[in-house]
Length: 250
Image 1 (tube, one colour):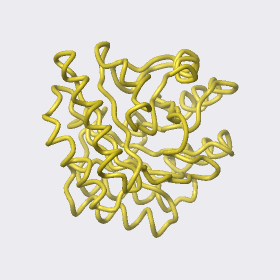
Image 2 (tube, rainbow, N blue to C red):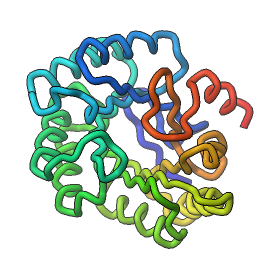
Image 3 (tube, one colour):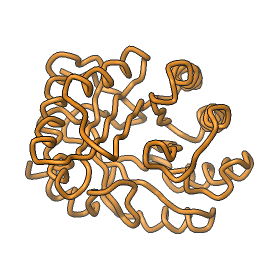
Image 4 (cartoon, helix red, strand yellow):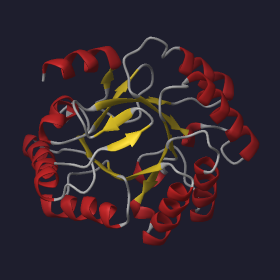
């Protein structure tokens, strides 16, 4: 059985998959507007996709947004994410800036988790995991392949590597090219649950073909799924209300 990661009162890895909703907006005002639209919606944690923020390189303005979000989501965990263009995100970013901005967010006292891409390199992951843990927050190590679904052995290797690097949660998202690719992703999830349960895992097959994995992933061991209340952060995400309803019946 996967270990449970507790973030505030939220237990990730226990019960049905937790619903994470991304906020994708370019300015402080638009971010606040998107946050307020979530009032009353069914979700468990919120992800700020900071790679869309026009003032990402201005520390003071990043902190202003994080404070606004902290005030808006007092009881809801906040995940801070810079998704790089190499993994389907909005910006290219240097390693130095990636470390610095993530470290500032981790040390702000305003976020509960940070996302760290393992393809930035072991040294980068090590530094950010250590920084986050010293600050008392959790790390989701992640990897995203928008072109294909690697073989099951490779997916398992990547997820296990995230665990070896001391991430609290291991996440992988891949693009299916066939129905069998979706089965590969789900089988990988089950193998991780049965044989490598050191941490919760989060897996998804993207696009229309992979949408079923966002609904049924919890049956195989995936601990978080992503839904939308506006712009989506990856292909195949479903509206929050639809996702919430379907998860109750799976």
